[in-house]
Image 1 (cartoon, helix red, strand yellow):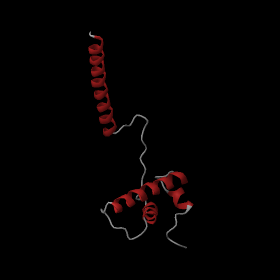
Image 2 (cartoon, rainbow, N blue to C red):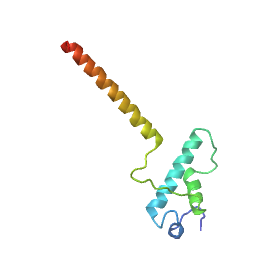
Image 3 (cartoon, rainbow, N blue to C red):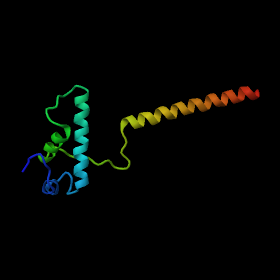
Image 4 (cartoon, rainbow, N blue to C red):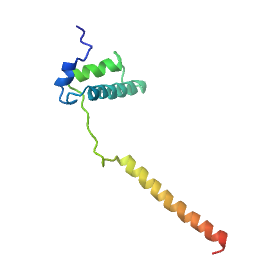
Length: 105
């Protein structure tokens, strides 16, 4: 049999995907996309297809998946929210000043 296949036994034995076929596919897909992006940007050179490499990594137990909690946010998201908040406060103040000027207040 080919060693390029991931069998259900491999998935059920994996602690990372907890026996879920869907989770295993998602893990391999994320890795394949990452590898493809890295190759596209010239950081790595692939000698096999990204999906094949991701399958090998899965079978070797080198892939994992981290769960985000509902309240987990990234620093980028917090910075974006702060930027929007400060911009909206400034625009509200400008609109209020323009309205005051328009009505002669």
